[in-house]
Image (tube, rainbow, N blue to C red; front, side, top):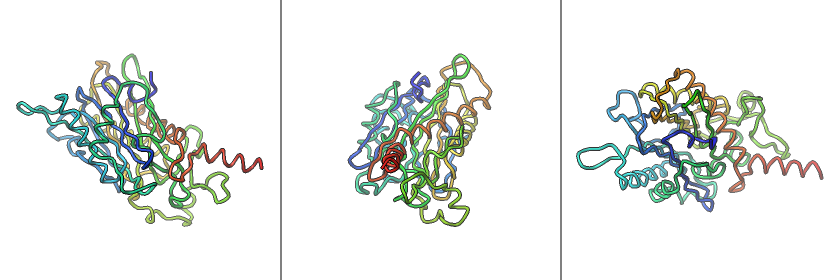
Length: 331
């Protein structure tokens, strides 16, 4: 196994990364079609084609999901994914042509280095060209290139966010995987140990503040950071699910966000979880078991994203910050 969302049969993933301008996009392709669901919890989301994923919508299958930097401008990257799929006759067939169904969600990375360069249709197309079902690069790549976290004291005290992935095998044939782009306001916490992995950096360069304590004490407020953060997620499995069940799987994926990001789903975050069910196994498992797996892999992927990140635009990663603190203590 790749320990990635690409362990799910029928799923491929590709990145477009622009380190020079601190932005990028990530594409999850399901060219054989997948039943989709979505759950939007944050109050500041930027999305495209989410309505087709909701129960009651006519279109049954989607063919790709895009996670992109660039704020609302980054939604243009989905057009390149549509062109890539159309060239391969992948999509919702109408008479003698196809319309690929490609929902998308964006995060705000404008200004980390520049606000003038954003992922566009060409970037989405290049991400498709790079897609594979093999190992997935994590950290400051794709949609996570310009991501930051722990911004309760503002961007100057933030820590580098990024992109991460994880998977788990259930039973004989069911695999559940997730990919996340973490650009959250909140701290990143290891739910297994309760340890704060990333929080607002302290003034002396040693350790982190507890963002929740800052908010509860009134020493920090969320409105100053409104509409500039989010955690974006794609959860996938190879089980056969209805649209209602896929929607529930997306809701369970949000539990993983709440476990690893504290606080999550704020007025300043645009947290979105997509769910995909490729239906490539006949093995049936209870939806509750699939949901627990979704919660687990999302939380793991968030931790991996932050731990794998590299500093960019003057924002250090957790490993770089810890190394600098160690040198300071030694001196």
